[in-house]
Image (cartoon, rainbow, N blue to C red):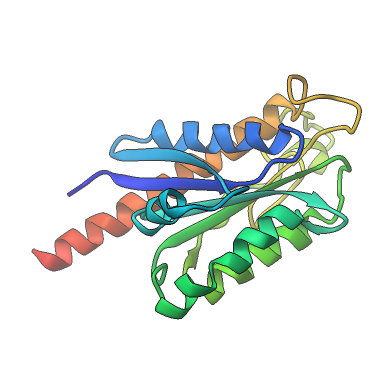
Amino acid sequence: MHDVRVAVAFHSGYGHTARQAEAVARGAASTSGARSSLHDVTAPDEALWSALDTADAIVFGTPTYMGGSSAVFQTFAEATAPIWQERRWQGKLAAGFTNSAGINGNKDTTLSALAVFAAQHGMIWVPLGLAPGGEYSSQGDRDDLNRLAGFTGAMAQSPSDLGPDQAPRDGDLRTVEHLGAHVAGVALRFERGRAAVAA
């Protein structure tokens, strides 16, 4: 059985979402039997398409601007039309993460759009898989995992006056690192199942 490959395909406008992407890759790579790779989708080329085509799972990441994904990420998504026509990502695993300056910022809208994008490609969506933390209860802490209570994917918040050296918060980065490890674990279970069927 080969190592599963988790590709992180992301756009970052100011560096905050890039920090999330790095955490996803770190989480996936921490899983025995998994490898991860980072791919900025700003200027798609053949190397990007090849890396995504050969991945077992793709984790999509974009900042949330005006209640949706960035224009750069949407341009990338639309550029996948030939892949969609050929069903090249059919059956791959997918997951997503996003970041915005606001606590809410309509991040759920972005994650839902990423899930629909994956579904159009015939991919299998992997949710965050964490109970809500943070101020969900009076005993919570702002650095808990999943403090923003996301379920579809991983959310982070970066105040508009803080650079990527200060935001997102540690808990938000650990949350998205969990997502990377979770996706890698699911990919390994899928691969083991395929290997067992083949045997």
